[in-house]
Length: 328
Ligand SMILES: *[C@@H]1O[C@H](CO)[C@@H](O)[C@H](O)[C@H]1NC(C)=O
Ligand SMILES: *[C@@H]1O[C@H](CO)[C@@H](O)[C@H](O)[C@H]1NC(C)=O
Ligand SMILES: *[C@@H]1O[C@H](CO)[C@@H](O)[C@H](O)[C@H]1NC(C)=O
Ligand SMILES: [Zn+2]
Image (cartoon, rainbow, N blue to C red; front, top):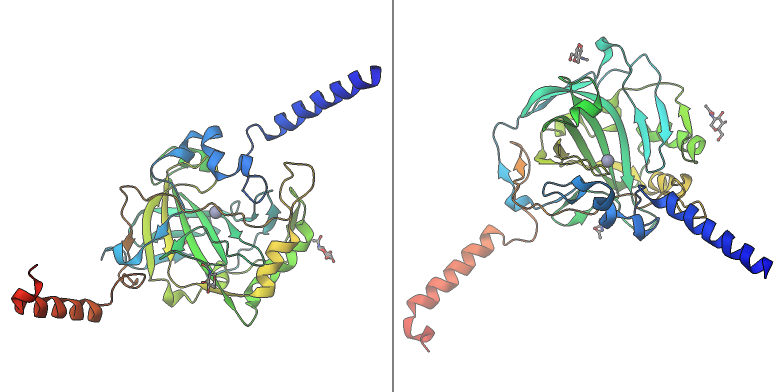
């Protein structure tokens, strides 16, 4: 009897502990669907808003905007003198860039941005061995991984302050494509993953490098899509000017696998889980518009090619001319 009571108390205690552990925390479906993206709005109301990210970019519906000229990248081509700290934050791997002296701040401006935005950090979203893991999709196609470089409007002092204003944050998004050869520019980051497999662990990289090393050839960055959306993790604030580049970054399968097999998520259940499929699925576009830069592709995808439309019109006209053939 005493043992039963004791068991009962232990059970109730366990339930309370487990419940307290998940309340207010969010996760991806790959960790536990009970705290996955469908439930984020219960702990952060913005996540249920009408202007959420990521989205699927339907290229033939994107609207060309001639004002979307080249973005000016300032400081992207220099290795900062400070150190770079790579952190497993329990949801992703993040490199914090802030803290550099003013002269070394990395910025973006122009390209339809009304202000100067300062780079704060970059991080990734990925899938697993058998699954693509980008957040944005183009014409319904998901890519293996996605890089987000998060910038804050330089008008504001902190990210928290920036989050209180529309246009407070600008994120540059780069999609990855699987390549045969390793992308050696990612070696430093990938080597560092082994040192931060557990949540909260960090490693200071032996050396910094120009941010542009991680990106496609700068000459190809005039092709991008622009829309207004949100952070893709709680609290999902709708304050982000998104730029999704058309040109993907090449990365090899073994390099992709290093992300999906080295790191562990913040534990929400009992057992530690490999950090994989840490992406939010596309959200409804609702009444928003997607704009295409001067050079971006706005055709393609599941639509009829011009030549097919021409033949269709020709066939209909011929049918109409033949008159009675079409009458019941
Ligand atoms: C970035 O902008 C700040 C002012 O907002 C400026 O002081 C700094 O020099 C800029 N960085 C580069 C690399 O031009
Ligand atoms: C996954 O990514 C690969 C490489 O980019 C692509 O060929 C494939 O179509 C993608 N699969 C899906 C289901 O989107
Ligand atoms: C990272 O881990 C490797 C072994 O995988 C070790 O040799 C190296 O010293 C570690 N680096 C740091 C900065 O802890
Ligand atoms: Zn992100």
